[in-house]
Length: 140
Image (cartoon, rainbow, N blue to C red):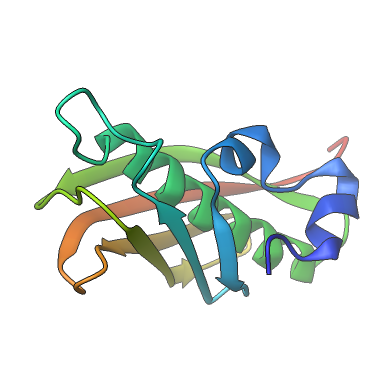
């Protein structure tokens, strides 16, 4: 699954051009848990390691999509916007694909917090990302 259809059409939101450019593919999608894969090739820094910024893009994409899915359960007029992100890189992938697994820590009416663990093809944790999203109302 590349992107659920409803994510493309709801309020004109979706994964966006950056996620498409980085070839992020969704496997599972919900407010509580979202999983995606991303290739290392094409997302590396000059030494051939997966770029730390690519880990952040994967993490923010998954956390924001999950937060948005939660926001729309409050009402269709609600959406999520990231207000804080941090990442700790503990290993580097050099080939293959990485998997990002996003898990909700807190799903509130005004704020969500998600943790995203990014692992290489051998299951080794490469990065841990935490994102906080603010839930807002359209035109509100």
